[in-house]
Amino acid sequence: MKPMSRRMRITLAVTAFLVLSAGAVLYKLADRYLIEHVEVVLPDAPAASSGTGSSTGSNTAASGTTSGTEGVSAKAQYDDWHYSSDQSEIAIQKVETGSGSEKITYFVADVTMKNGAVLQTALAKNEFGRNITENTSAIAADHNAVLAINGDYYGFRSDGVIIRNGVLYRDEPTREGLALFQDGTMEAYDEQSVRSSELLAQGVTNTFSFGPALLKNGQPTSDFEHVEIDTNFGNRSIQSANPRTGIGIISPNHYVLVVVDGRADNYSRGMTLAEFADLFQQLGCTDAYNLDGGGSSTMYFMGRVVNNPQGRDRERGVSDIVYVGA
Image 1 (cartoon, rainbow, N blue to C red):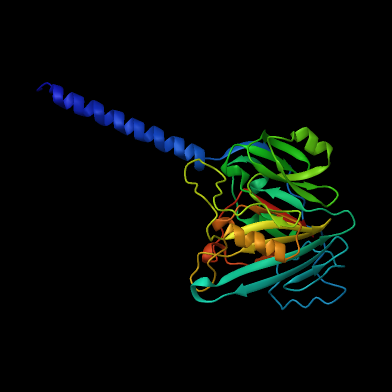
Image 2 (image 1 turned 90 degrees about the horizontal axis):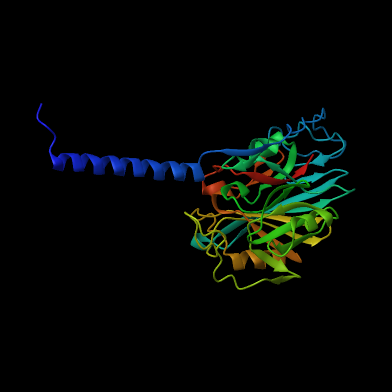
């Protein structure tokens, strides 16, 4: 057999090095953005109650249009856009403004919690960790939610302060977060200035790590000319027109959840952050906070997705939701 030339040996060695390097890079990217890393497995979500969804009042939902009612109390009253029980009042409005390339379509859920009930959160697959995702509607259905929106997609990153339903899961202060309190109030805060132990002592039930804060004391927090939530691979400034999800508060226990559709010609271009802040101000909110948007933006109500995710009626998997239970 003819011995391999020096040039061929070098070529093979370089090729092998490049293949191994490319493989290492691909694995690192997959590990960072695709491979699930489960840190905590939560108890199974509570099963739906035995209520059938029949109402003692005016259940005006058309047959087959309000399907997610298996766990709804028989005392609840509801239709396609409203829900009323002894724990919550919900009214959803679809709003369209502008026309053509400037048309914007968004959904506003006016939510009042009653008798000590609070907004709740749930995690994809009932697991905490990175890259664990499910559709908003699937998480909502698993937790017997009446209303749900996507959360902050905490699982895309490994930092931030993450408290969910009173449990601290992550304590890596990084950015401006949002805290929901047991008394029905909410407040944006600097994660690096307030310890998680202080938050829990103050009665914080849930925190979100995305942002920015849109309103404080009824006023926009900035002109939002340049906002960057993360600087890692695949992120960019987010101040331009995009689909949006956000939460605002009018008074204790009176919230406004908003989902803006986008990236769909002649249906909705999305909103800039400045427009989003202005909307919450117009809705009468004192404080408001921007959650994960883009393809994640989803609103679920009574068994159906009411908006148009990604402009194609196609949900994108997320790591968490904010919801109102039945």
